[in-house]
Image (tube, rainbow, N blue to C red; front, side):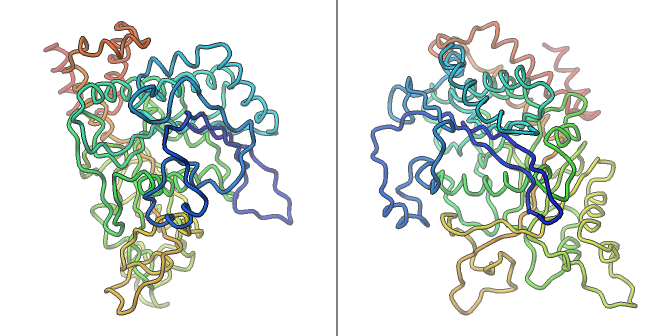
Amino acid sequence: MALFLRKRLPLTRREVPALRFKTFAFHISLIPGASPAPSRLAVSQEVYSGSSMQVWSDYLSVHLHPKSLYVIRQYMHDGECGCLEAFGQGESLLQDPSCIEEVEDRLHFYVEECDYLQGFQVLCDLHNGFSGVGAKVTELLYDEYPGKGILTWGLTPVMSNVGDCQKNFCRLLNTALGIVHLSRHSSLFCPLSLSGSLGIKPQPPVMFPYINYDASMNYHSSAILAAVLDTLTAPYRLCSSQGSMMHLAETLNFSGRKVVAAWASVPFPALHSYSLPDTLCAYQQDVPWKLLSSCREQKVSCCFAQSVVLRGICKESHISNCPGKQPPSPLHACESTEQILQHYLHTVFPGAFSTSHVLEQPCSTLPPYPQFFSPLLTRQGFLLDKLPSYSSAAVESIPVLAALQSSPILHTLLSSLYKDLQKLNTRRGASFFSAGVEHGDFQEALEELRTLSQCYETGFEADESENEADSD
């Protein structure tokens, strides 16, 4: 689990930095299993394939402050036994006074360094016992730092094999309890994954047209999600933006909708030498992005509110028509890339509250970022009309389009998870509940999940829910 503190930095007239914040990182991790750590030479040799990589720290090229790490020694990172598997196990860890003291000591060490604390960004696994750890950490932050933003990202790997019924049972319960508890104490919560489903039935992983990645490799999937996360969080990290983490949350979480869905186009399909209006005009019906919140993708024509970021597009890329001639579309008549994106969003999502940001800086894909891109991409990540006759160079950067949406599709995600849980025979999960979760608390969380899903209903879906409630 990773926790990031955002500190706003003062700007001087002579300094115009790209970002106006300082980040303090705090990691809660487990003891690695029996596999030996790879050498630096092995890391450099495997940087493109990632075949020998085991944990995130294999790629770490900076030294962490001792206060940045807290290792949970009661459980192992991997192996057949001794793993942090259940929500209750994670919760009980943060109920231990010595553990709470260690966590609070590290938090206070960094918070005292902040002259203006924006808030906390929490990255937490949903599918294992870290969902319980994250639940208690966000509760601690909520109680200790009222009024500060807490943006939480619930992460799940791609589930390729659900043959182990007991593990699948625990995964489903951990995920549901994690969503309920993390959203309860967060300003905003977003499930983020390349997995096609959070429920019982597995769905194929998300595929991108210009990336050939191996969904079973954490090295590949985490690289994609990192690019998306870096893009989505830009609105409260820019010099040009006056917004904060709390401001972003408040634009999306009204009416009890504290869960949001993530969408992204990695890379954004901008043709080399084409203007931004030319590119967007080709996607007037459907935005060229993929849903990254573990729900079977549907064509979404509406949302309640959204925050959209487009990066890696030059400010001059909107110029494509000759002066004196009639613009070929309303998008071509816009005077800036910001206006183009905002006009496009209002056209595709009429009635939605949309905020947009355009960054010239692309997403860097230099090593150790994996080279899993299509040969149709240029070094800067733009599309070619056809395959080059020569061997293409490594992609050094890519444009990215990403969005956080409060959308009716979250009703599908949350209600489907609720229905899957209703079908479970909880008596099969004696070991899960013996780890610390009471049956009564689980039923209460189940009803909270149902209530949360109803916040995203449209008129027709609300009528269906009423009928289901009557039948219950």
